[in-house]
Image (cartoon, rainbow, N blue to C red; front, side):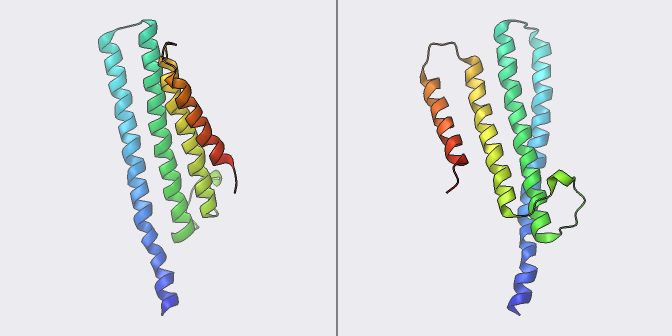
Length: 151
């Protein structure tokens, strides 16, 4: 009886699959809406200065970050589905998830990229006056180094 309960309880993971999939879809749609808003704002302002270019780059990097996190949420959703519900789902070969460690590694890698992207926006807009950017950069570097250390 316990074996049957545990065997079928794996389907509880469907809640996590649905949650991460809905999160992925929401982030992708939000990212697309941000792109549309950015283009509309750019056309309306008509500003073609260096400052506007820096702002556009920073906004674009932020949007890429949204898409990246949305994509990782999809990979986690698909990976959980493959691991716990059905290993025979039609996904690209590179998306084969064989263990929870694979999902954890994917998530760690995207966190590192997200941190780098988070640092890139202030770095682009940095004018050289405020040295707090150094503290931010060092903190991000410390987190990245710590994430690479295997205990």
